[in-house]
Image (tube, rainbow, N blue to C red; front, side, top):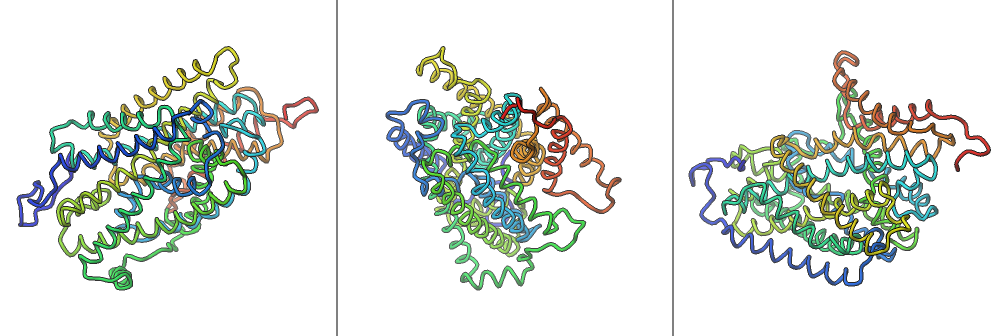
Length: 506
């Protein structure tokens, strides 16, 4: 499905402007960018082994990890969806970001010391050490579900835009476009794993941020505004509201702050993709510096994306652009801005795409091999056999990503960032409850209780979500559904546990 292109009178509706860059040129830029990633992958993966793939031999530089994680945490969804949110929600998303800053501090100074003391390659090993193998497999299973759904939603959004900008004009079907993108990612992550993506994510984050800055500068120029004048124009247009005071609203500031903290803890501190990069840093103190620097820069970058969204909304109002939500930014780039901006937009977009997709496939492979298959504990396999299994798992996840990306084609939610956060409330909630119980519970979990409770909690939340109007009147759950899910999980685990005896598991 192509982007809806407005009729401006200058050209027929549904056609690209005469000044549009040719699809082969844009495709050549994508392939050149990919060749650069392959070069980085070859350089970093020349002497890679299983330890390099899973934890980068614990030799990653903290500053590189911090910068690269910005691209991973933001992704193409932020690049497209966050600017599209401003017309309806103004700057209220900053309430979530403020909560995330507190959440990142909890990750850095509570969770990360536990991971380093336990010397884990997969963070779900901590659940195994404290609650048993069933809890470890449950945690890994929910991470795999969470990251697979979230990453494929992000992947779909960016591939859809690439399809509309370039590939559909060349007659390529959507399924082939998605397959080619996944093949590109496979080629540069297959051997190096974490060791490679620490470097490629750094390169790609730089591309995304450079594109963001150029787009902001160009829109200010197009609107005839300076930076301060741009902010005053947004304020005059009623687009700068940050704090929502309505306690019944899903966007109420108190709920958003708590939800932001929970999202940061769950989607970063309890996420193997994010934490495997942190634990690839040799020293805990450096990993903590990495986390807090990433948190601060991410907050600034999201604020700049919201500012960009405000400028796009002003531009749309002035020029009668009908597109909204996730389609606003691409439509303005394709139809109303100079042709060279398409090149900047495309480079920034693929720079935003690859860090979230490559890290997700690598982390899913790591968690499956370490937590579910126990690959590194198997003495009956040599390093070559373990590497063969790892590669097969890696290929398998690429196939799953392709199938789910095609499935999202039919869903096509108007705001993918909202959908992703909604999914996270259901899938990361059990992880948050499991880790909270493992850290503070001090109790022995009954056999096989973890998967039962972890499945029951989101099911109960789903029933409550469906019945909000009858149960709570005007009150509406927002992102705090994640906290409710975690609380149900914690309570269920407590009910299914007993005080540790002298012979209980440590």
